Image (cartoon, rainbow, N blue to C red; front, side, top):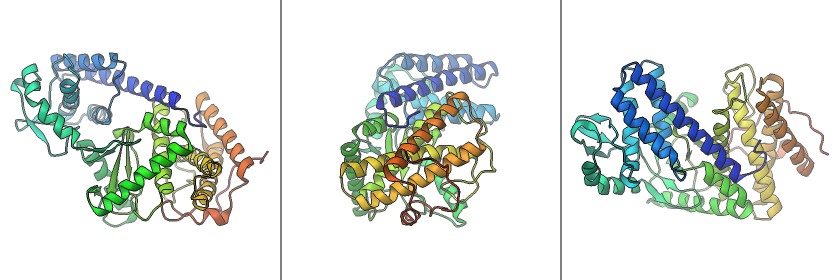
Length: 415
């Protein structure tokens, strides 16, 4: 499964994941109406809006919709007192669709103190509420210009992978990463969106552009695959955080890149986070790893205890990264020494992760097929480059944790 880049398959997998999310959101709305969490009229309107958009083949659900789904699902399942407000937030997410695409459906909106928040716009942007808290053609026309400008202001530039600034869901995700990084480091961390207009911001943006150009030059199919699963990149500054992505804000990649790092380093992390998102599109529809919460296995990338699902993801990510670095070396695109170091570090993680999965993983038939395919991919990389060099692996210590070279690897023949 996805041993090599396949943009068409990635787009199909993302589309299937999005369809499943929309279908499940409808079920959550119907359940909420039966439980009188929302009014039947509200549930019908939101369901009709979702189904109308889903029927449009060109529609691509955005990160804000996934964020609204997971927030609403958690609130309803947990019996949260704000479950109704979380469900109605879907109307606020669909407001941009209602305004920009002529969606002929009136949707209920989450209203706070007479104001409508707009998740797709800046975190602090609010609109005056319509009468009755349902959209009307007149109200939408009245606010569409301002709404469009505010949403557009969150997009910094359009390259292979567009850059985006703070929105409501983005700010929520960044705060979550800040808390997590603080807990792991044992001290308070600062983390915020990078000011791309600053000197440092301009340098990081230039690195982003160079990294995107490198990926397109070395592996055009991989570049197309990245655009299929990555909606935008958020550049950050502060703390010991390097990069992440979350299914709760699916399609968004969060990176804290230093101006002194190379374009190859930047490209590494773009590929890294896209691999996570690609695996999410499969695992969330048809579970591959059945004992995802198992805690007894070591991790091939981090020293802190992690559920086996983290190592499952890491193994796939290492496969994609080792394959990319192999193609960088084959292409002669430059930065050969760093590419070789990264290749050996990622190949080590891949073989260690495969050993962990073979020893402790419980898989569905599809999951077993996937891991077997990853092992064949690893076998090909070992055939091309030999087994990981401990000396080279240890040289990559600025954007990844130093490797545990004592951790056993899956034994594969080179030929």
